[in-house]
Length: 216
Picture (tube, rainbow, N blue to C red):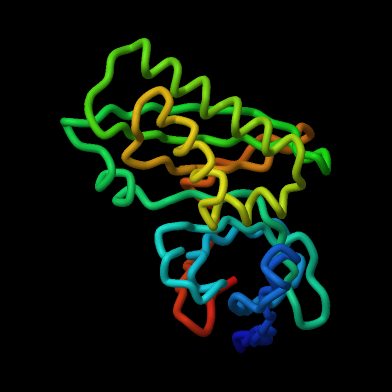
């Protein structure tokens, strides 16, 4: 009895341009292939900010995007947060300084709920009382700014260190700071479980100056 030969038809993959949100001028930040565009929905990408802005000073900031809509040739992404590289923090903190962390849940002017994680580093070791005063100052300044500005303004101000400069100036009245960084921002969605940005669920991602390639 002759064997039946089954020939599987190869499914053709299509290239899609990945488009950043409005706060990054809707720039093309990479590209990806997929045999089914529905597979791209909710895909999470982590991209160095300097690849988007062209400013090398932003090399240590990683922007986290989620694909929210797929059209004929484009995958449109939404901003869901950002992190800074661990080696940046390691260079700031040493045994002669004090690290002060603060975590603040804030509702922005455009009604976005965000979680901002900041780190302040003093020039010399300080006692618990000074740490508490600086932590309180950081939280107050961060909340006051974020509650009176929309998400796009907040992200741009943090990435350009505008908020950090305000806090550094005010902190001198308590104790001089060596540095202050916003180490993480998360956009919170009350209807869904918050995704851990440190471990984005993606396939292989490679980033260079021209393209971000993701194999679906």
